Amino acid sequence: MRILLLVSAFNGLSQRVWCALREAGHDVGVLLATSGRAVVDGVRAADPELILCPYLIHRVPAEVWQHWRTVIVHPGPVGDRGGSSLDWAITEAAPIWGVTALQAVEELDAGPIWATRTFGMPAVPPRKSALYAGPVADAALECVLDVVRKAQDPGFTPVPAEQARAEAPGARARPMMRQADRAFDWTEPGERILRRLRAADGAPGVLTTVGGLEVYAYDAHPGSACGAHPGSARGARPGTILARRQGAVLVATGDGSLWVGQLRPAGDDGIKLPATTVLGDRLRGVPHSPLGATDEPAAPDAYRQVRYRRTGAVGWLHFDFYNGAMAPGHSRRLLAGLRHAVAQDTRVLVLHGGTEAFSNGIHLNVIEGSADPAGAAWAAIRAINDVCREIITCTRQVVVAAYSGNAGAGGVMLGLGADVVAARDGIVLNPYYDIGLSGSELHTFTLPRRVGTDVAHRLLDDRLPVNTAQAVRLGLVDEVGPRHPEAYAQWLSALAEQHGDVRTARKRRAAKARRLAAERMPLDVYETRELAEMSADMYADRSGFAAARRAFVRKIRPAETPRHLLFAANAAMVPPPRSRMANAGPTGARRPSLRPAFPVSA
Image 1 (cartoon, helix red, strand yellow):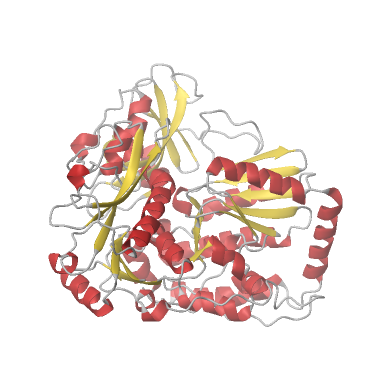
Image 2 (cartoon, rainbow, N blue to C red):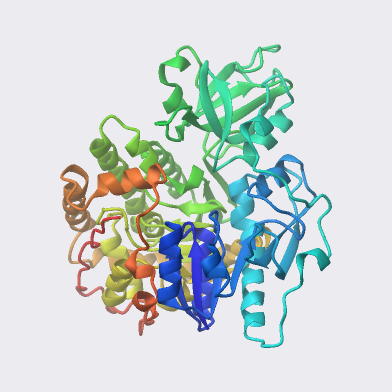
């Protein structure tokens, strides 16, 4: 079918749907809802057989839905209506939630129903972004595939909304959630505050006061019970900042404390940044919460972005950075964890990212919020490059990069130097740079060695997402595990044990050491070339990095749909290479070098 995705943004869910439909053989294009007129003109030019809206916060013009079958994917069960569905579901601790695919009509979320799925809500309050990227995205994709099958059946008729059976208790029409609905007082129990903060995570945050500053708060984690934390004197006044650690602050609540990792100053110009960055001098006198050894057993209330543990011959380095963004401090912590892990007497090292995001490269918000953005960007890329180098040169263990969540730009390149790349089914990779940067992360060394030089160029130039099935064909990914996080963790443990066989691991490490020793050019040359290009992007702004970064951070809508997302531009799939190591050579012979990524202005 000729299917048009009409979206407010080409986000993770939209990309996953786009990949799945193309994988199924459909002709798929994307149209951004930049304005009503642009939508009408774009749909008329595309003339699709079906319009799907996996992520649309704007109303579909009547001129469109009256003439083309248009199906909205709503993140709520049958009977739910409104633009704050997930916010209400998390806030009210709904036991069951769902996704509904319904036909666009004049009244929002009131059209005939094409498909629906339900799922159980986690008992622990989930972050809205985690719920959206996990159960909601899974249910949405099932609904989309169901809709496409039904759209090809001439005899199918969607069920009128008033005749559909509601499967989730409490599902109903509700207004947009306001800040008054989200408000809390720090004297309230921590669990209630946590639920409200997580229901607003991603956007819009909850308006509150921290350290005497009016802010929107995000990224909340349980803290200690009352008086249990070394920085929390029993009876501390709720709202008091008790400690700080790795960019987060510990705030006293009515019955304990909460870690808050991200804040956005109230006002038109505020952007979301690590809490300690926003509060600055207001933290004078607030103690740093110390961390013990990297591999000490973690207490349930510990706030730590990088953790290490070992099970027999396998070392596990877990890291989870908010939205997958890496400022220099994140990269330094990860590098320290890597060096600690490499020094252990294990045979396998698993580099395990978060389930929401493995990594999305350098932290654009921190760069935009810096007094010296060019200098901050330079420091960020140098720091993440150190992590990539540590992975590439590790010969003491077999390194497994576990992509549990989506990855983009330098975050995709981060793990490509590992011996094995193991992805969770259903994640999406964006292996290109699309923000006015040519890119580094030593990708000119790692990428062509995995996919071949021609395909590497194609990936960087086409700027299109890749799902796990295509990633395996291309050689970006070696193994794909189950979608469910717990099943993936069990599968990954078995995979790590398999690679931990004494003889197999010894041979693999020795072969890697020989390949690295046989390289004609040292890694320094690849990095120097990449950084020379990046310096022109960051300091001379030759490709519009400043404007693209600003638009990304401040959520400025593009004026039009990028041409590479339109039907004609993305019709061809990237062809699979004949060999994953097509340019590696059997004995480490000199390989064709990959030119730096083409810079693209947003």
